[in-house]
Structures are given as structure tokens and as C-alpha cells.
Length: 251
Ligand code: ZN
Image 1: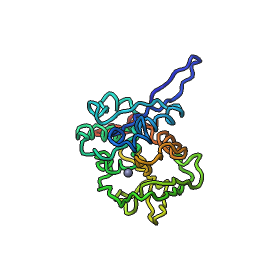
Image 2 (image 1 turned 90 degrees about the vertical axis):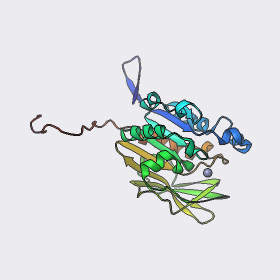
Image 3 (image 1 turned 180 degrees about the vertical axis):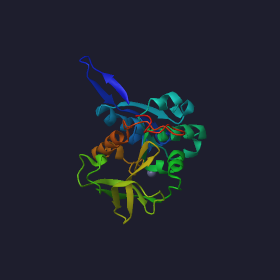
Image 4 (image 1 turned 45 degrees about the vertical axis):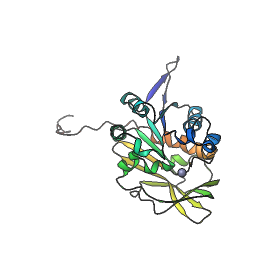
């Protein structure tokens, strides 16, 4: 993690977040631009900055999608929003992101990012699900009140209109299920789930269809802030692999 030094000699760990947004809907679709005039990434950046994190943004149309080796090496947590252009993400960039997650970078995957190359590669399953856009109400239940990602939230909260996702969600059995959604059409969905891959922590969070003001909702913003804190690399020992001297002899 980056360090911010203060004159008094105190230091504070600052979480460095890179928000990656495909950024296509906002440029093509007026209805989306009305909700997110500066892009979905800008809407998510503000609460993270307000929480004291160092935030940068990256988008698909930048060289290397804005995810150069240098950027990723300075990223503690990568947040991913993509939808219509998953197939345009270059495989070498996907490889790079996966390597960084294995090395300890946190990853927060939002909404339709369930179908991103990065998430599917890390999960090893199709990550497919059932969906429809019928303006249904979504009620998210916190089903793990002890989890740090649920900190400060009510027992459940609602989004008046969202896209509906339904089970079965073809993911591996999650390490933890933090949120479960119910939709007014009757579906349920594991909408907040965690995984570990290598040294990296991964959180998938369901809400966030581009035509709804979901990322302006204070509970949703709180979840994303909490998720970035949770997914930031721990300060545990760095494992060494391969041939090794006996720990007895090393004493
Ligand atoms: Zn959607």
C-alpha cells in the first residue's frame, strides 16, 4: 500500500484504487449520460476519494485500456465495470490483471462485470445468470452482519428500480456470501460474494445497471468503499516457493 507521510512523523496507509470503466454506454446513450454525465467511474470515484482513498480512473479506449504494468503495480484495489465490450479487452491486459490479483491486488467486480474476461478467468466457470430489465424493486439483505463489507449498513436496503438478476449464478461456491437480493418479480440472487485467488481478495457486487442511478445511492456507495478497504492487500508475509532450507536450520 502507498504511504502518506505527515510532518509529525506519523504515517497513514492510503489505499490506491483504480476504477476501470468500459465507458461506452455513457458516450452512446443519452439516457445513461443523463444519469452519469461524467461516466459511471466518476460517480464511484467521489465516495472513494471522500473516504480518503487515492483514486485514479482508467477506461477501455485508453492505450492498454489504461491498465499498464506501471498503473497496476501502483494499484491496491481495481474496481471493474464493463458490459457491451467485454470482448474488446485485450487478452494480454487480462493476463496482467490476473497476475496482479494472484500477487495480492484486490478486485471489486460490479454488476455486468460478471461476464468480464477477468472475472470469468479468475472464477473458472461461465459466470452466467438469468436477467431481465423490467424496473423491478431490489431488496438487498445483509446476510453476514459480521462482515467488514457490511459495516454501517442497515439489515436490508432497497433500490426502487434495478435490472433483475436471478439464480442460478454460475460461480464457484463463494468463500462468503455477504448480500442476498430479492426482486419484486420473485427472483433471488447472491448479490455480494467474496473469493480469494492466490494472495488476492475478490468481491463481486451485483447492483449497477447503467440506466438507473444506483451508484448515487448512499448504501451502494458505502458497500463499494467498504469493499475496497476489505480487498486491499494485507500486510502478511510474502510467501517463497520452490526449494527451501529447513525452517529448523534457519533458526
Ligand atoms: Zn445491466
